[in-house]
Length: 286
Image (tube, rainbow, N blue to C red; front, side, top):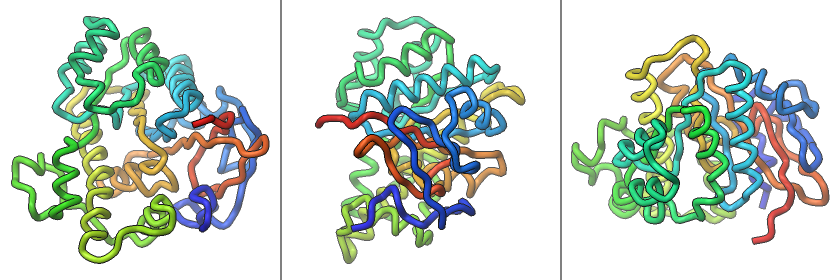
């Protein structure tokens, strides 16, 4: 099976070219060379949306996401942080945290972190520390799990208008996204009607999170230095085919992608269409 890091897909013109970086390096996919955190952040400043992908259980990926957020702020961006880890129903708790009104313990309880996400809160603490220190706006992006599960079982058409929450009908026609989905499913996606429903649920995730980000973007005060940084799994970021694609279908704002990968043998090889910036973290023992 072809690695998910080495698929010649995506809207990026460099999808036929590969890149390689060492552990601990940032890599500029446009220029085809390693870069620094400062230069990587500088290259993102002209974007309005930056999707920063992760492996959920990798501590260094979250440290990297926090470092990028902090560096964007240092370079003068007004950063909004949107997160896959919360669904829209928890926005009030995120607002309270952004305003500095909740301790970590109170935030974990009021946001229902343990049922919303389930990974150790401390993995994500570097991101929340950056949000707290710089008083950044924090946005819940996800669709309720019950809704995604229902689509996976019964399909999009089974949802009521209330369950759809104003989300556009998921567009299932992108063939390259299906290639990525197949790779993410280890080359063996479910088939038949069940497979189509599960694929619909995956597309709903991306479509719903993009919808949450756009609705927040439209109603919030902003300047020409405002950047919406989206924290999500790599499967929702890679190749510009996840949340970024669903954003691009509805806005002309510039969108960039950062993907955090994991070193193998001291480095990692990847297709340059995978993102605008790649970071190579140390191997993580699972």
